[in-house]
Length: 245
Image (cartoon, rainbow, N blue to C red):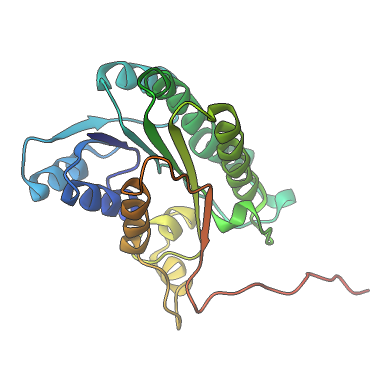
């Protein structure tokens, strides 16, 4: 059994790679940082791991990697991320377009490339990493939230099309996950601001998401988990934003 994981060089993607390796999967781990990927492969330490440098915004590269991948039993669409927390009217268009390219376009292109072989073999599991931001809006979430809403609906629509094919689709929607580079990237490598996001609370860990992935892929083949939404106990839902004059 082979699993392909995007964004495997750190955080959730790395943790998923470790978990699936323990379950005996052959791995195709991808990401932009080759040394990080090589370090992970060396740490896991066997020949069942293939490293492939991949920028998820490069559609042609995605197609080439997919063509070379061979049979993929589990596809983990993990690569993505947020840029900035500015209000819509103050955001940079380039940030919006990058978030669409990473969270939407790249995921779509790779899924389109891998899916036919799964349908042909009448088996396969696609796990998309969404976010609670795809369901619950918040100030500054604008395009990131919209992109994750696409992931949510795309996953459900895939499931509708794939009924009877034997292919499973799950969308995992985490809340706050610490020990990743998510906030560091979002805040342009401002380490203090990134760390402040998790001050005074216990966030989810990448391993929590990885354990959930491990549970999903080991379920009997007739079971499909459609959507999983999870948060740390310390995170909840905010009140409506009211502008008073």
